[in-house]
Amino acid sequence: MDATPEFRTPGQLIDHLLAQRGWSHRILAVVLGVEESQITKLISGAKAMSAELALTLGDVFGIEPERLLDLQKSYELARARIEARPNPKLALRAHLFGGLPVAAMIKRGWIRAKDVRDIATVESELTRFFGVSSVEEIETIPHAAKKTVVASPATPAQLAWLYRVKELASDLMVPPYSQAGGESLVADLKGLLSAPELSRHVPRLLMERGIRFVIVETLPGAKIDGVCFWLDHRSPVIALSLRYDRIDNLWFVLRHELEHLLKRHGQGAVMLDAELEGERAGIGPTVLEEERAANEAAADFCVPQQRMAGFVARKAPLFSERDLLGFASTLGIHPGLVAGQIQHITGRHELFRKHLVKIRSSIAPAAVTDGWGDVAHASA
Picture 1 (cartoon, rainbow, N blue to C red):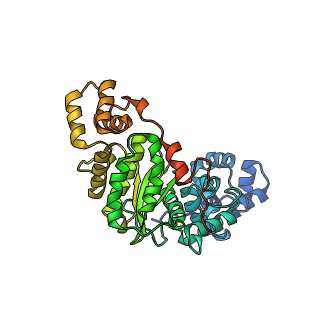
Picture 2 (tube, rainbow, N blue to C red; picture 1 turned 60 degrees about the vertical axis):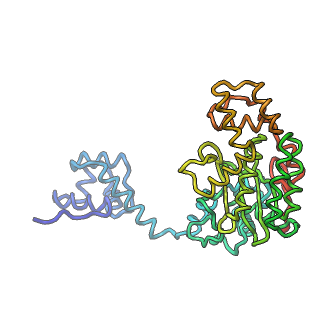
């Protein structure tokens, strides 16, 4: 028994069906009520199979019209593969423009281009921004060699934010860092916890200790809170995004990154902290050891955890305004820090929200800040 022949075009299938019936092109033309030349063109592939014609031929030959249309699609795709010139840059552009928030980077002034449609300028600017010689080497491209070792997986938007931080931090003039200076910094920062306006001293205190400190607004969808890394063994960098403009968030994230610095976690890999909230801000078994240590130090810095535990044990589940203010006053800290810890411990984020005061307007003017309508200028 002969095997069923394979057909590459609808014309080949029609020619086979005509042969089975002993029909000529002319007979089929008469049946369909068309010129014989139309049948010749259809069989040779010069005329495409339409949906209407597929239905008609299906009735004539007793076959499914979908079979004819599928052959037409396969034939057209095969012909396109032969005729079309492949553009290897399309996949590359898909990674760049689909992964990186290019429009936001243009708006923020990180890359200098009119808009995303100015592809040549955008690609040239991206190579400058990422410090590479060609777009194929940009770190967000899957096959590109990774220059930055990040402790946890980073998205293209997070890497772009990190590169902007590096660009700004590299321009800062600060004295060399010493471990003793870093450790003494904790006590100095502790004295600023009583009022939001005192946070204006943070940038100066860090810079005096040789810590390059910048504030860079996060990019859409990046959800970054902060980062700690080292430009070299005596040049640490701490950057915050102030994603949440709250007093408790500022001090928790800052102390978290400072703990990474003091433990020199960022010398082996960039400690990029995203979505530093909920369980990720805790000390449970699912939290990585380095992050757990940083979270523990940050929570204890904001409110001594032994005293916090005692306060919760005495007052839970009912926390009064009077109790909150009295406890904060005893510790010499802003009540927003206690409120933030209560929310984290209880999961009741509606409690004492009025005390979670905004702080960006106090700290940002004293720091190298990029975002919220302002562009920090780095050397080209």
